[in-house]
Length: 576
Image (cartoon, rainbow, N blue to C red; front, side, top):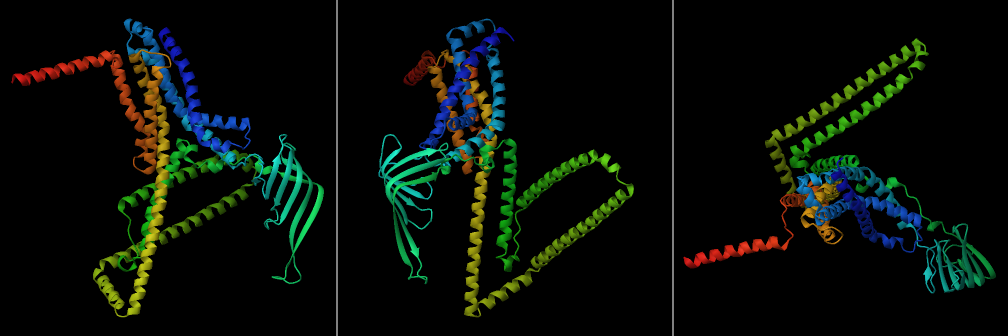
């Protein structure tokens, strides 16, 4: 590697690492602001909180990489231009493309790493992060008894205190409602004072009650049920009473990760592709079934059959054939595995007498042959039934004259009697309502499938687009730094934030458009790159020409040319 490449890479990697860590930290804070309310008052340990922040940091890395590449490339080439190092390198006969080549190769490798990160690491981190977040949300707040307020955090108990002393143990005036029997407020405990503390690693809470009363309202039957039941009120006075409460409900439970594995954020490209195929197949099945479910209400004039469109039928047959091929491939792989396992047991099979083996193989072949005959007969019977059904339908539709005569006869019989007419009309209204409800449910189901399908599609292509965005941001940052010729964290950071906001807004808008079905998921995922890539090519072209598009003199020359052109045109009009 040449010294020039080492110099440029050394100048680029340092700012990249720093800006990447800062970008991850800022994006992490912004992302976790949504969940701060779920952490407050729940006594979450630093280890659990650190684990959650680590998982969410991995989640934000694909978005932080383009920002870090943009800022670091602007700082690197802006600093080279500010110290006239870029001018000296160009003066030695090296072109700008050769100067940015080492950093471009590094960004290319970085894009490959970002793709691997989005496809393999981020889904696993999301699965652990959201399962842990769910456990935190389900965890009850820490025990916090407040003066003059009822506390219901302990299951089946309601506690109210009058005063809590600063030591956190001594309490004055306590009321406890015991709901363990499930009969309402029929068990009450009152005490003048109390000592409250936890033991066995905060697994249990103990209350030492002093100078109080224990009230219980009991129902005692007098021999007959109903109104003759006698209510008995029992009061027990005590000097000291101990109560122990279990604090198991305050623990952080470990939920099974498989409960969240079906979410699109927890899937790689392979899993997303399989989900998209299954959703397409489900949508086609739903559309195909609509015709069969509605056709039963048109028995008179459509013979209870409505044929689906040819395109839908053709697409469904194609997906069914692909599904059958996958099943056949899977079965063949299993068969190969069984054969390999059988080959490993050949030594044991040699010890078995040949007569037994022959009898077993004969039975096996005979069973296979009988199964083949039964399967062939079943298939022939199904084909025969389909042909007969189609012949009946063809006969019904061909004999249109007899069908019309039958319809007229039925319609004439409707208008003969008023009772028959009312019965037919009510039946028609019921059929129409059934058709409407069936269609509405089918439409809602297909809308849900379409939204989920679009979300999976945009998530699949976003993994490619986010990796390619590292290259796009470099093509913007490196030429722009060579044009601006300013390093540091001032002007380059402002320019970087401007372009990153455009990238972030376009990505978010494309994601929402894809979910709502406005734009296809492929176009929505690549929309930000398609918009910003021509800008990067434009800046690269201007940097190769040493254009000073950010200098005031550059625009003043164009303004002077426009003024002179306008004045010359004005003078020509006056002379004419």
